[in-house]
Amino acid sequence: MAADAHPGGSASSAACPICGRAAEPRFRPFCSARCRDQDLLNWLDGRYAVPAIEADPEEDEPEPGQGA
Image (cartoon, rainbow, N blue to C red; front, side, top):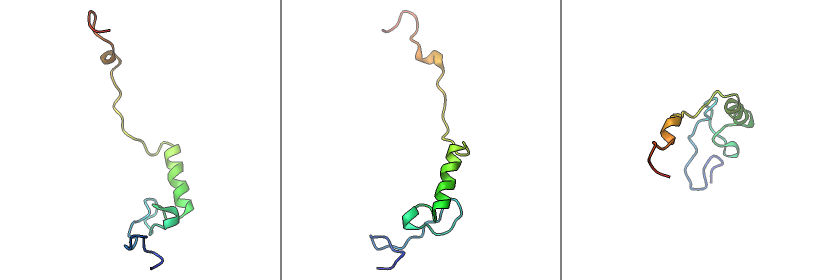
């Protein structure tokens, strides 16, 4: 089996999301520990964010005369 092949037999063609080089199986999906750590730092610094819609607090309260 080739050194860059996956156990399933197909070669890795994924690129590192930080620098674009070929991903290393040891650090996948990154190419190195440096890129892996940079990605973590980006999350911790707030450079990445998952969008959220904040609920209106009034929607959570039951209307007078209803419910529990």
